[in-house]
Amino acid sequence: MSPRLAEAAATAGGARPVTMTLPAPTGPYPVGTATLHLIDRTRTDPWLTARAPRELMATVWYPARPAPGRPAARQLPPGVAAEWQQLVETKEDFSIRPGGADWAATRTHAVTCAPVRRGRGGIPVILYSPGRNVPRGFGTVLAEELASRGYLVVAVDHTHETIAVEFPDGRVTPVLDATEEATLRTLVDVRVADIRFVLDWLEVLNRGGAPGAGRRPFPPGIIGCADLTSVGMFGHSIGGATAAQAMHDDPRIGAAADLDGAVGAGSNAVGSVVDDGLDQPFLLMNSVLGNHRDEVLATLWKHLRGWRRNLQMPSAGHYAYTDLQAQLPPVAGTGNMPADKLTGLVGTVDPARSVRAQRVYLSAFFDVHLRHHPDRGLFDGPSAAYPEMSFID
Image 1 (cartoon, rainbow, N blue to C red):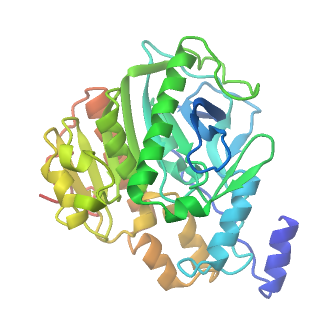
Image 2 (spheres, rainbow, N blue to C red; image 1 turned 30 degrees about the vertical axis):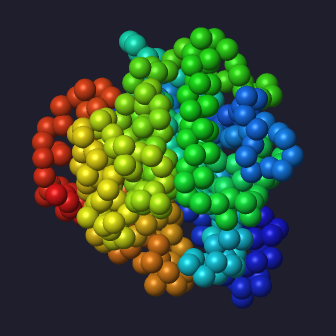
């Protein structure tokens, strides 16, 4: 336990911090991971008053070969874990008891810098954009699942908008007031530019370049492994809205999924995609907050001309579509978080069944539209195997 956590636990009257675990991926391949420090020298960071290039951190997960002795990666770097802990202990939506959860202790199931498993052809690519203020690490459960099924997944922290971003030199960059005050459309515009830069970076990497900042080693076999003719994207909350706009703006993205992200309408639309619509496949997955019949999604839904489905977990909360679905129930179960706060964040859905349903439908969506596999009727209508998911016509 860190000194700060021990002090918090003592202050809270001896609350024992919960060490949280993540469900293991279910695909046939081990998972490798690496962190990437990327600098877009063609673009000035829009959130800074001083002229500086846009600087990002990203995580890549991929199907790996065995790497005995190499450690499993942390879910969150230490500086980010500390900022997140402070947030959830002070924000009323969470109300976690001081010292009640050890956010720095969670390990993933991905091995750091394991060799890439390369088969015939390249590895399809899936991009991930997290929700507002949410670190990219809270997309680990779904990212690892996709990687274990043979995808290369890249998650991006949108610097100055995420609660904290930790860089390799030890800097921890906090959220800025400018992003808190910005319109959703402005945020999405910046996020889409980040995503397009990451795709450009992958193209250079595929050709043998190493355009990252610093000299951190890449996983063996990663150069040239990405199949950039087969690219998808998903995101949570505003990250889901970003996925829709990014696919609209960049023809390299061929399928996208929005996990509980509103896109607005009229003057409140997050981007031109709402009125222009999409021809590519689009999956909308919602919580109790609503579905495509609601105003904040109805206009986009009406303008989707390609394959489309809207699935909803009515018993799920907004953060059920993040790793918090797996992590918060044990915190509440020990009395370190009020039960009503848990329900407000992730809902009443059984956590294991929620994760299972999300994994199955999201993986199948990309299998069908990036790999052209048959869906075996999964998207034809409700399934008795996944009663948590409703199909919204």
